[in-house]
Length: 405
Image (cartoon, rainbow, N blue to C red; front, top):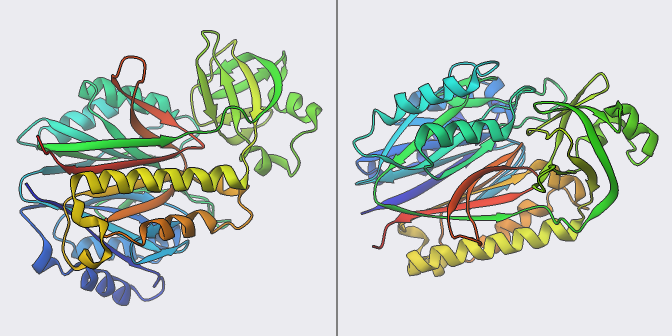
C-alpha cells in the first residue's frame, strides 16, 4: 500500500492567479496523484478574504477540508500570513469528506448525522477521523469529541479548532471544498489498512498559582460564579491578571472536577461577568491558574519533533536522509499547537522556527499549524486502551503510515 503526502504553500495573498498557479505547480498533480486523494488546507484569514481559498479549491481535482490559522510550518517554508496545503494520496486508502449543519444548537445530533453521511461513502469502515472544529462560544470541545466518539464507536480522532486573531474581524473559519464556514465542522474520514501514532505534550501541571477557588455556578462551558462571586469580579479581586480580558484569555485555567479529574482549559471570551471557556466546566470543581514559560514551549516542541521523526523512521527508514526528498516516502505527519502557548515566547516566531529546524534534516512530509484547541487520540498507560479527548495549551501530533502488519 502507498500513502504519500504532498505539501505546497504560498505567501501570495493579493494576486489570486499567481497564488493558485504557484500551489498547483508545487504539487505537480498529473505526476504525483494516486487513485484516491484528499486535501487538508490551513491558511491565514487573509486568504479567505482575497478569494484565494475558493479559487484554489475550484482547481483541485479532489475534495478538501481545513480551517484558518495564525501560523504554518511545512518542509519548504514557515510563516504567519501563509496558505499551506497538505495532500494525502493513496493507491488503497479511501477518503471521504463532509461538512456539518450549523452547530449553534443540536450539535450532537448534527455531528452524528454528518458522520453517518460521510462514512456511507466509504467502501470500508473508517480507520481515522480528521476534524476541523469551529470556534463557537457555545460549543465545548469535549462535547464534539463525545459526539464523534458516539457516532463512530471510538474511531481514533485527530483535529484542530479554527483560529483567527486578526483585529479586523476575528472570524475563525472552517473550510470544505473552498466554502468557508463560521459555525460548521469539516470532517475527513480515512479508511484502509493504516497505522496511526499519536503524541501529546500537555500543559505542565506543576506550574500552578494556587487559589483552590470553588466553581459555585457553571453552565456548560461557562464559569458564572467562583466562590459565590461573579466570575470576573472574583478574578479582578485577585489582581493577578493585568492587561484586561485579552490577558485572561492566554492564562491557563487548571480545573479539577469533584471526582478528581484534571483539565487545562482556556478562557476564549467574556460575557459580562461570565467566563466563556473552550471546554465543559464541572460544577463544584476547583480552579487554579497555570503558568507556562518560553522554555516549556520550546522543550515540548523539541520532544514532539523527536517523536514524530522517530515514528517516521520506524515506518519508512528512507526518510532519515534529506537526500531522498525527491522521492515520495510513505507516510504523513500532522502537528497542531495551541496558539495560547505562543504568548509565553520571547520571540513569537520561535516555536515555528524550532519545528522547522528539527524537521529540516529529514525527508518526512509534515504540516504544522497553530490551533484554537486540539483533538487527539491517546493511549492510557494504566490499561493500554485508546481514547479520544479534547486539549488546550497542548501540542499534538499524528503520524499516518501504511500498516506493516
